[in-house]
Amino acid sequence: MKIEHLIARYLLTHKTLSLQEIGNFRVNGDFALPTEEDKELILPENAIEFEYNPKAKQDDSFIEYIVEHTRKIKPLATSDLESFTILGKQFMNIGKPLPIEGLGILFKNQLGNYEFKQGSSFIQKPEQSQPAVKEKERPEIDFSSPPRKKGNAKWLAAAITIAVAAILSIIFYTQRKKSAENVEQPVSVAADSSRETGKPDSTLLVSAQAARDSISQVQTKPATDSFSFKVVIREYNDAALADKKLAQFKTYGHKLILIKPDSSRFLLAMPFMNPATDSTRMRDSLKVLFGGTPFVYKP
Image (cartoon, rainbow, N blue to C red; front, side, top):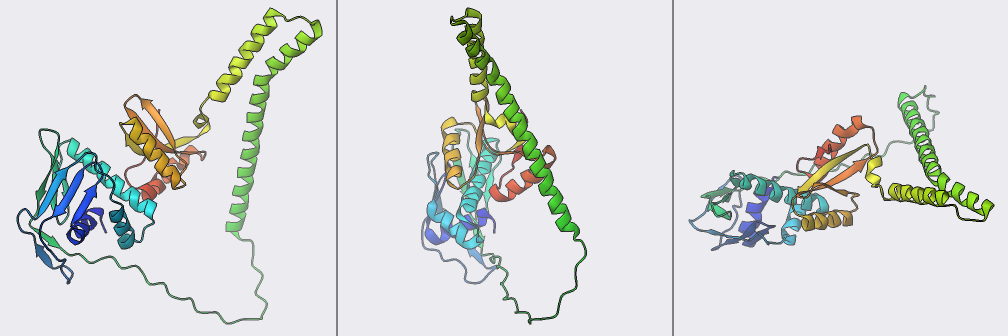
C-alpha cells in the first residue's frame, strides 16, 4: 500500500499527523472510516486543517502504523517515509503539486510556504493480504540408498567463485603491503646512515622529513579511494542534516560514507569493492532497501 494512502487512513483515524519538515495536519470533526471496502467517505469543507512548519518532527507513531500495515521492518518503513517527504519537497520546490491520495494536494505558494487544498472524498481501499504460510508435509522416511549424483554445475561454479575471490584478496593484500614497505624504506635508510657516521647529516634529515610527509599523506588519504564504486542513496544541501542522517543510518547497521562534491551538496553513499559491472545491480538492490532513486556516484 502506498505511503500517501496510509497518510489519509492514519489521519482520519488518529486526527493528527506530522510530516517531517513539511507541517502538521489536523482533522476537525468526527469521521469514521468506511467499514466496507471501496466505499466512499464524503469530506465536509474545511474538515482538514494544515499548518506549515519547516521544523516539524518525524511522527514515530505513524512509522509504527506503516510497519503494522506493510509488514516492513522499522528502518525500511522510516526510509520509505523519508523518501516520500524528500521527493515531495523537491516536487513542490519546482512548482509541482504533491497529491496525497484521499486528502487533497500540497503546493508551494509565492511566499515559499507550503499550502494544502482539501479534496472532497476518501475511498477505503482493501489492504494487500499477506500470503499464508503453509506448513510443509513431513516426508516419509526412506531407508533405500539414494542414487549417486553426477557432478553438480552449481557447486562447481560456487567453488570457482570462492577460489577467484580468495586469489584476488591475496593479490590486493600483497600490493598494499608492498606499497607500505616502499613508503617506509627512506626513513629506515636515513636512520641507519646517521648511526654509522655518528653525526646528523642535513641531507638525510631532509630525506627523512620528506619520507615522513609522504607517510602522513598516505595515512590521511581517504579510504574511499580504494572502493571500486559508490551508490548514493540520499542527497542533502545542509551539512548538519546530512551528518544527522548519516548517524541515524549507522545506528541501523548500514555502513555509509558522506561525500562532499562541493560546498552545497552532501551525499550519503554506500561504497563497494565489487567489480564496476555490478554497479547497476547494487543500485537496484539499494532502491528496494532504501527507496528513492539511488544513483552511482561519478566524481
